Image (tube, rainbow, N blue to C red; front, side, top):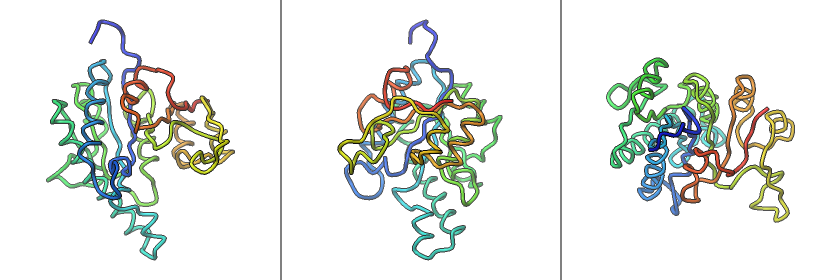
Length: 240
């Protein structure tokens, strides 16, 4: 690390559970964990404090379970527990590359994670530890995108980095429409009005109310986490 001021002071990285699958169809890919750990280590070397929110879709999605007839509350709690499994896996990967890591959970499970306490989380970050937030907000009916927005605001992050399967936000699904147009920048209001669905409406609204920038980028391209952390032109930025 040089003596230059880092481009950000504190960031929150939002990872989907599906991102951990890699080339498979289910579960957790050690190769993907290793790639993320390597890039997070480089971000930390820049002097940037980093927190992570992880989804659980590679194991169980509450909304999908509810759609199949499960009680929504029960399904959401199952999804939250899936995020805890992913958080422990990420902690293991991070510590293998020398990153001091703490898992903090929105649901109390003291054998495997600390309870989320805002001041304690901020103290961990100030001491150079990576904090992985598990179990969403700890409440049903809230997505991990909303959890990411909430935790980012609570810890005073400079931005939310939203890692996805595509390289930014498009006017329509680029997987289906070859003429889809990519945006370099959109506003919170445009995301909501045009139903761009990069994050759920609650998350977008919370970021808008707190002027929290969001950068949407592709996780699959090696080095992208570091590029975004360096404020390079990657993905799509959502601001006012």
